[in-house]
Image (cartoon, rainbow, N blue to C red; front, side, top):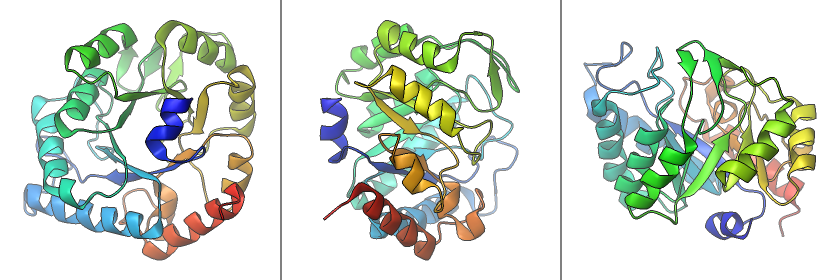
Amino acid sequence: MDRFRTTFGTAKPVIAMVHLGALPGSPLHDAETGVEGIVEAAARDLDALMAAGVDAVMFGNENDRPYELQVDTASTATMAYVIGKLRDRITVPFGVNVLWDPMATVALAAATGAAFCREIFTGLYASDMGLWAPDAGRAMRYRDRLGRRDLLMLYNVSAEFADSLDRRPLADRARSAVFSSIPDAVLVSGAITGEAARMEDLEAVKAALPGTAVLANTGVRHETVADVFRIADGCVVGSSLKVDGHTWNAVDPARAADFMARVRAARGDA
């Protein structure tokens, strides 16, 4: 867990999402505002999150619906362009996630100098996108071939929009993934974006992995963050920091600042 803590500068980081607008080629893309509109919206969200004091940010393409298991090259290229335009203003560690494509995620991380990446790297799922069978060995070897052995790999072990075809309990699957596929952290999710992971799932996975960072990946809210932090080693948060707590809205600076105040109290920060 040392690399994890060194990267984020705290034992229980808050990783805040910068949700990019729908990218070119996806059905919800706004051709009128174009790529520069995506850059401008991301810049506003990024600035608000950093001003609130989050420990890290992660760029993701959550609005590229319907989702794909192998994304168009243009999606990864556009995300790299957007991050490149914002790179000089980022003052915290940043990560990337290209939904739902581990190889594209690793490639984007390598291209942009990201400190970490998140994806579904292990398991077998029946999903909205069809049969889902990621390959952690291929993704991690790709990371190393790209010269990024330092890139932290955050494994989501309870995929949103999907059901695992591996019927072992979640804690057993998480423990197995740590042994077989050497993630730097394990993430526990709810059923869909913005929906909370079950506390009993967080508790079970953390009990099975006392020496591995375990984070709540979805649905952490102002009123639950203290309880989450009593169990988990941090969280990824997006929707709760938006206007009206809605995933597709812009970041609300006041909500983000209030969330981080609660986090500091929960962590006992000086």
